[in-house]
Length: 114
Image (tube, rainbow, N blue to C red; front, side, top):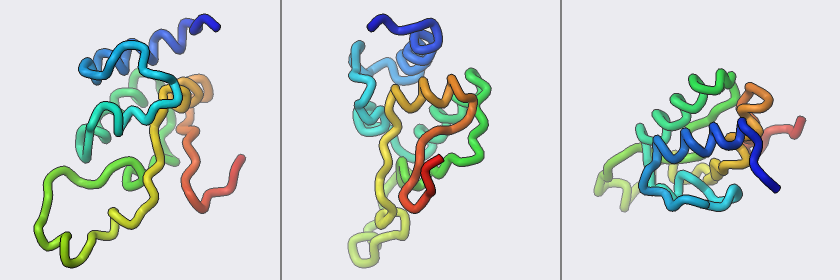
């Protein structure tokens, strides 16, 4: 199926923001993992997406997508709280769906499905 204009615009943003990501990355791929972005980079990517597509980010929970940048050797002895939070992927399909609805559509563990 051919992508519509909105999907092409989302793909273009992803290509601009994450230029090292291979073209044709499957729409179900976890963009955070595939692009190897962490911390502030994830936050900035999602923020740019939300501004460009006017998406309400009220439901966004960053801790499910990435921990902070950097490393602390003490984390070997006492893992930080964010390492115990389940990872939730951000997929191209999720971004397109969120852009269509103009609200963050990713659901997190413990949330009721709408």
